[in-house]
Image (cartoon, rainbow, N blue to C red; front, side, top):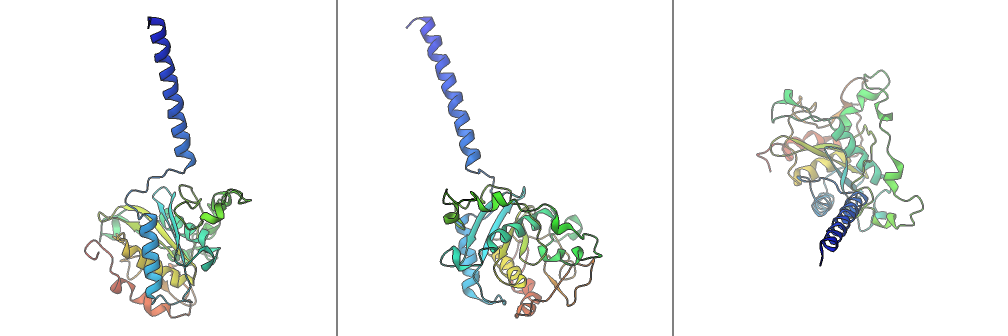
Length: 277
């Protein structure tokens, strides 16, 4: 092999490597690669959700549920359901669960347990009173709308995306769903160091039951090291149930299906913090 042939071979190898690298990058982008380190996997989320639903004691209507997890950037990491198939839960609650996760992540801050002044976790239900007419955040619920193309995948479902709802290949995974939800069911996720790593959203029943289920699933996956909040005398992100709700407060309406007593005892029954896992 002469020098010219060697140079040609080297150039071909470099070009081929570049093409392969570009293809790998494109493949990663199209597959929705997302940093979900420290967050529950699809299997862990599914298992925790199924266990919480099957064990009962959540109030509400006793429905099966959807649950979604997003990372700190708001990218969806996992979507799961508790029923036998995707039709066993309210279909509309799939996107709502992701919307709730996006909201809880978007309006919570880092902190160090139990110093509430260093950061505050806001549940989606803590926003309800603030967005009522006369509230300081009135209109918040209309900001950051859900991206419907992301929510449902191919509008014709010719790629089979509907069949993937609630599986490890759900088309939401790796995407930014957006949306702001202001009733119960969304909770921020904090690791053992009190760092905010994302959020969980649960949907499929009354908003109060959704909150209870999200709380119990968060406890099960060990990501409830809450720095503080507005619930239970500003110690956590529990709901503050009042009827009627006053504008410009952190209050949430009662749901009326046995959730009130459960919510009042949530922090005692499923304590938050690094020593309660």
